[in-house]
Length: 111
Length: 117
Image (cartoon, rainbow over all chains, first blue to last red; front, side, top):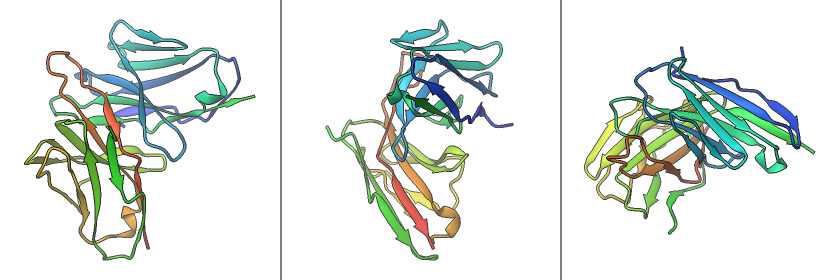
């Protein structure tokens, strides 16, 4: 089983749609969770950290369910500029700065 | 601040050649890492460093060496290039989040696209 699993997509949605991405992780001792965004042929950039209580940043909402070892990202009112690959990232417990990346979910927002 | 700078951006090597991918950061970050990204596999950790003079192996270290003589620089050496090392390589740095209870954001360089023929 992969340490971090994501639905690879692709997700093709119209502008204005709401889209949700899911991610599961295998190590129950993981403490840090992130969503990164990666544009085509570019480097990954932090979209948002994921906190136990859930957190929201504008149109983006991240949720964490520790019991199910599940992380989600909700994008509301999709924009063309949201088209990218979204990477679920989890830390590997006990090791400094070892982050484990999911293989990413590709999103295309259509006009 | 330039952030994390990687050079070169593109490189073609012949099988058996060696080369060094350069990575420098100007944010005084303690932690630096090298990843490779292959289609459908996500980013995989090659080597990482928690400070000058300290390095350790990641998930896929074979065929690569690193050193960390200064806080700013973390070069990745390919000892004898193989076609299996064709990939996009990313260097990343991050800062200590001691006391916050969560790991901090990783900042990535723009990547090096390496082709081994």
